[in-house]
Amino acid sequence: MTERSRPWQMAAAVFVFINVASIGWAIANREAAHAATHVGALIAGFFAWHLVPWGRIRELQRTQPSDERVEYLQQSVDAMALEVERIGEAQRYSDKLRAARIETHDGGR
Image 1: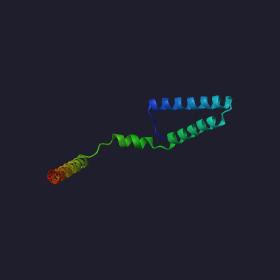
Image 2: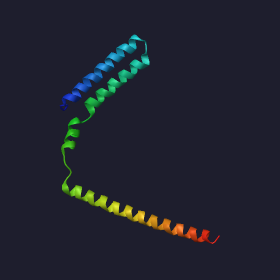
Image 3: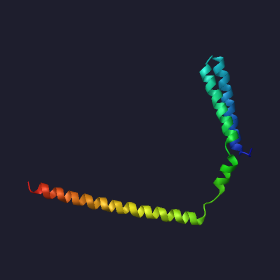
Image 4: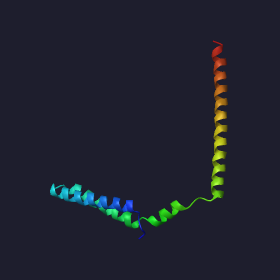
C-alpha cells in the first residue's frame, strides 16, 4: 500500500466516522435500509482506498508529456481548426447561393 497525503487521510477518517455514526443512528431508529446503505458506503470506501493504485496515479500526474507529443497534438489541432474553417466557408457559400436562388424565384412574382 502506498502512502496517502494527509488531507486524504483526514477525509477518510471523516468518511468513516460519519458512516459509522449514521449506522448507529439508523439502527437506533430501526431503519434497516438506511443502515445497509451506510454499510455499503463503508465497503465501497474500503475497496476504493485499498484497491485504487494511488501511487501510480500520483506518478502519472507528475510525468510531463514529451515535447514531440505536444507538438504533434498541436499540429493535429491546427489541422482540425483549418478543416472546420473550410467547412464553415463552404456552408456560408452554400447558404449564399441558396438565398440568391430563392430571391430569383421569388423576385419574379
